[in-house]
Image (cartoon, rainbow, N blue to C red; front, side, top):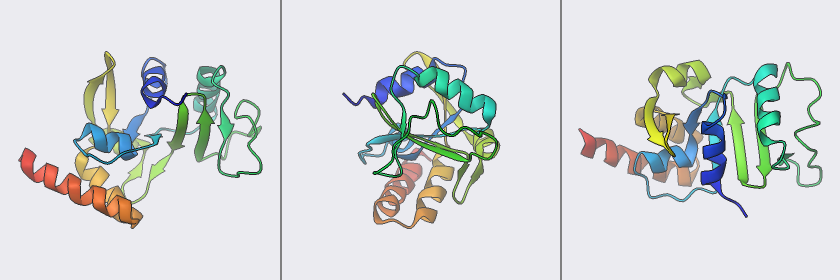
Amino acid sequence: MKNLNNLLQLLLESEIEFVLIGGFAGVVHGSTQVTRDLDICAAVNPDGIKKLRELFKNLHPRHRMNPNYKPSFLDEPKELDNVRNIYLETDFGILDVISEVTGVGDYNRLKSQAVEIELFGQRCKVISIEDLIQSKEKMERHKDIMTARELRALLVLKK
């Protein structure tokens, strides 16, 4: 069973530092759009990859970008130095770990502007609504443009 809430809770209870981005972050900011995956921005480096592997070892994490070849994340990649993004399927659902958000910047940039909220009894850094709007507009996909419009309207209501 796919459960993004459990996936996020597991991440929040870990030592992995990240900023929640994507559709789930949009929902946190008030969007009504539905999301089917969990997106985070993190410093993707050998130490972080090892932590992710340890955290997900019981959730059968597999790379998901090639439908004909889905190796275990626990085994691949072997060389960890040049990894920038990780796209996984797990027993709890899909997780995308991104090192840089299009149109906004890398993990450190996002973290500096992130808002902090409480989720599942833990503190969670979430991409700012302004950064999320900017990233959605840069994606240029219809669903992202629609989400950006909705987030802009929510931003006006908050002011």
